[in-house]
Image (cartoon, rainbow, N blue to C red; front, top):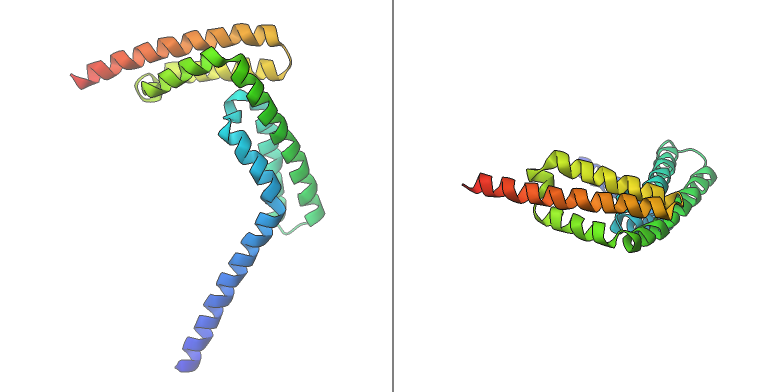
Length: 173
């Protein structure tokens, strides 16, 4: 009986060590890219730099898939380097968008505070789409059109905020 318990504990311990070593390998290979990806996510790059962020995510997920399938580590590193470049561009584009769309982002924050996603969901989605489209235009290099589209997104967020406040008031009665 003691032999079985010892064997069982050995198997459990080796499984835990294997899982830890797998995580350490993942962290070592993906670490730099994960850091830039997190920076992009913290800047809301999914909305403010949609093209670069989406391209980065697509290639990042390919790298994860390549790694999980146990394929060539060199290929994983190449994919991660490419994804990291897209995430870095997303960070830069997000910073530019934050400057360009200051008023739209302020209106978005106000609409978010009014719980627009819950109380005016369709309008919130339309406003999000408008901002994402404006950001994509900016990312493409057309500042004038992006600025105009950003004002349209701001107006949508303001209207969405108003609708959400009214819906909350009705719900409270």
